Image 1 (cartoon, helix red, strand yellow):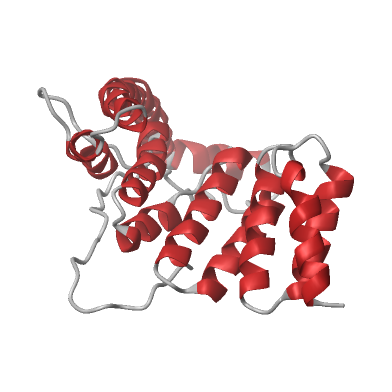
Image 2 (cartoon, helix red, strand yellow):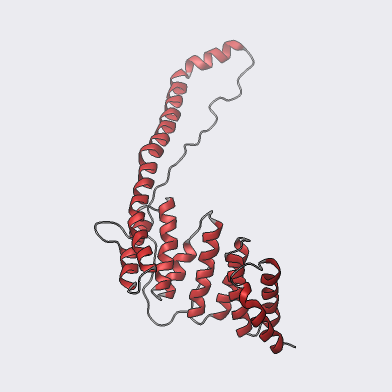
Length: 255
């Protein structure tokens, strides 16, 4: 779990937890092993028929209740969350492409024009795909606002099946740690980010960052190996353009 060293007083961040637990009813065995005679079986059924019918009714109600909850509560809530997320994401995209971006990042986080921001979506739609994406976007917004502790907190909470976003989240945590001066932590997260998904974009990107940071921290051999990997496996990546120069410098430092 990502941790950062405290630097004086700071706001604590705790994600609000909603208790939306769908409990699936578990059942004990109703029928015990009966005596071998058909008469005794029939007598048992007659004697306990009210109990059997009641049990079936409870199971049916439980199944119908779950389906109703899913169709009329969970799915509409997920759709509502997406609607809220669209506006927050719109502010985020404006911020990315704007010179005066801080106020837009704040609006993306806190909402505006009657719409929720990322933080509201995380709190009110916990467990939905939109809330997961809002967690990632909140972390990135804080990173751009240079609130690095907050960025680490939210990005570390982000869990998703999207391997590229997972890689970017870990890499962004590395960036935040680097800005906080926690070089070893940043280095570790860059390496983690490079391993999440083998692809032309994130792998060479974070291998290069790990190489540069590693070299700064005395890990020259490891840095050279990362650069050589980019050179060999990702020759068309953007980072490959800088490998030869950086590798030459590092080899000169480590003859």
